[in-house]
Amino acid sequence: MIRPVALTVLVLAGGAAACSSDEHGDTLARIRDRGEITWGADIQGGEPYVYEDPANPRRLIGFEVDIMDAIARRLGVKARMVQYSWPNLVPSLERGDFDVAMNGLEATDERKRRILLSEPYYVYAETLTVRAGAPYRAVFDLAGKRVGTLNQTYAHDILRMLPLEAVLYDGNEEPYRDLVLGRTDAVLLDNIIADRYGCIPKNPTLRCAPYDIARGTYVIGMRKEDEDLKRAIDGTLAAMRADGELQRILEKARLWDHRQVDVVPAESTAARKRTFDAEMVVQFLEAAWVTLELSVLSFLLAVPLGVLLAVARVYGAAPVRALARGYVEVFRGTPVLLQLFVLYYGLGDYVSLPPMQAAVLGLGLNYAAYESEVYRGALLGIPRGQSEAARALGLGPWQTLRHVMVPQALRLALPAMTNDFVALLKDSSLVSVITVIELTKRMSVAAVDLGGYLIPGLLCAALYLVLSLPLSELSRWLERRLQRDLRPHAL
Image (cartoon, rainbow, N blue to C red):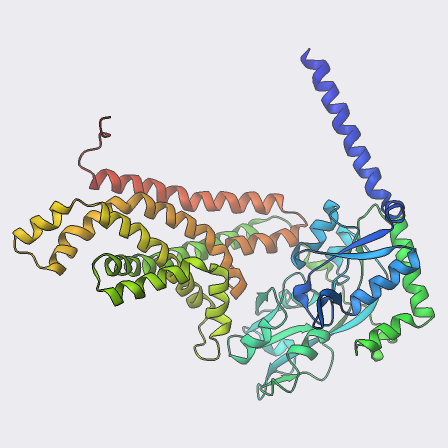
């Protein structure tokens, strides 16, 4: 019976795979059947790409919205944008989550290998932005410097071919903010972004190079098997150029310039295609060290601060208890990601912290709130007779805390502390939003280089286990050393 069942499963699986492949290849027919084309984009990119209408936040506007609406109208269907994180647009397209991807998607060689790309609908230029008075005139002057850009962009490809440190961001405004604060030395990004966040009157401290570092094109991405859809979209774009609709859309967004009629193809970046090699493993190990260093330093800040907060809540006067409780509620009640943004960007005009220090401080302050509750529970769990015995021996309040209460509380809290440190180890992945390249961020970058998440994802998971398992063993060893009676309580 086993063989027939196995054969049936294989046949069904093969049939399902074939149906899935055929279904993807029939995307254009399915679009016309349902009367709708779905396109993936990320509104975090903001104006002028895709963003919420200030007059009606439920309505999306932007030059890419107008272009996709025009394409859909010419195909005889309607367009609907679906929100996806920009770094995940290509993998999500390959999964079949939407029909096409369109959101400042650049025609790079890496994307050409993975998906089909339409004819260009916009020609952009890479613009170098530096602080006013800086001696840099070209990217070649920035050897050894920190240069900000967005991940998975043509600008990032250019920077990786130069002897400098590329600082990666997820948003358009943050690179220029860090440049103003002196955290980086330059920014290389598309002229659309530079014109709106860098070379503007409100940033008189910044200066943009008057020439194009390089040029590239924005395109629409489709799955490899959707040749029919590519021909249809290329045909509509050609018609929009011929009758002037594309120009009118770009003029409406103040994007039409000489580059649109003087097309210069982007330089090839085929030489930088990577494979999983020893150099990449070394990069993962370096990122793992950053993760471990960040976690240890943050926990070393969280533990003593948590103890102080716990003591304040249990033994402090009423105002002290109120302040300690307020701290705990604020840091527990708001996301750590928000706290990192406020600490690094929100307070940047007043205290400009480097990324690593801001990450340690942000995670340490956040976890101190959680640790304080662990220690407070441990303090309340110590029998009352311990403090009474300490007073009978003539110990003062601080001596009782130092020699009697806190050591016992730490011993009781040790298992929970171990769990919190493992959680902190994983939460350290959030600091990538403030440009720290830790283990998870390195995995994301490697996944783009390799064109898949499987190998870098498995290596990343293995390294997290390597970091966390020794900690668990250390915790058990400490418990054995601190606990005299290892026998469980009798029931």
